[in-house]
Length: 156
Image 1 (cartoon, helix red, strand yellow):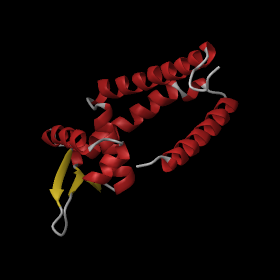
Image 2: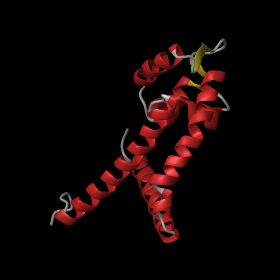
Image 3: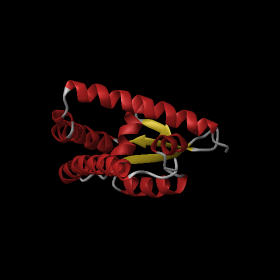
């Protein structure tokens, strides 16, 4: 068989993996949205502002961390700003915009975190054995390393 083709079994494994992730992720996001009104993108922005920037990040750094283009992030931030979750402030000394979490955004994130944690535990972690966790960890590390090195090998 050609290396560019997948066998029926390989395609079945891929679809099982992808479907399992989508179901689990979808359940987590649904519970979070129902309890807080946050979308996946809202949570991603707020969480990154706190985790990576102590409450504030350059807009470009935020876009890079989310793997979103500038336009998509800008539109999303406009909606979040209207809801009072974030502020955007141009830098005085250089080009660029700083995105800052508001107290309302921080409160909303604080409300969402235990809901997200509980859902992750319920739909994912509680289903795993210690051996599953070890296997998933090894797979994630291996695929992350290989994906990173193949990106570095790719021409710009």
